[in-house]
Length: 202
Image (cartoon, rainbow, N blue to C red; front, side):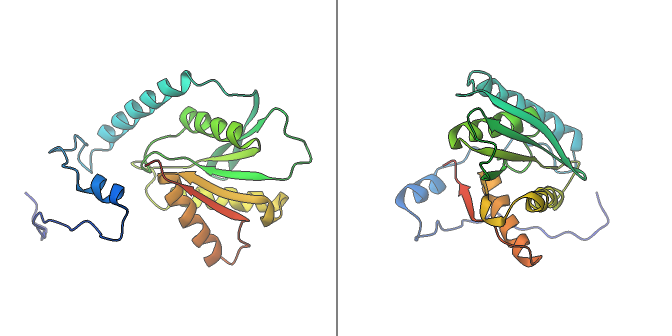
């Protein structure tokens, strides 16, 4: 028991927004299984184990998806931020386009080799240079560490690129961070990228 005051919020029914598509309304209205199976919020080691298990499962999928073209991959660092540069074979050295790729994974998964594999897929699909942010995540690095890393890489790109040469994007949680990054860029008075490409996986 804790001697600190607590507030209990009872379970409640939340109406599905009527402005959504019929498909989105149907998905939101689906019954959910009781219990999430997630560790307690303060169980950092439990979260690390769950994240490692999910990352291993995702990597199993990517192991069977060979890149459609050979790629050159280089590790990058920008302060505490880490990432990868992926250039598919056939991209000209004078092609100035760059896609800043922010990976998905519920804001807790998708780091390391998973980030690299997803970004390699992006580079092959786009046929362009990709810089992927392997951003820091909970439980060891709570918000805004991940967004800070995305901003660090955007600032690094601005050293060598005109903003009109940069597109910022990501899927799922990466789409969330891409939107947040554009707002952060604006708020810090930096030049905005040519475009933002947030993608949903649903």
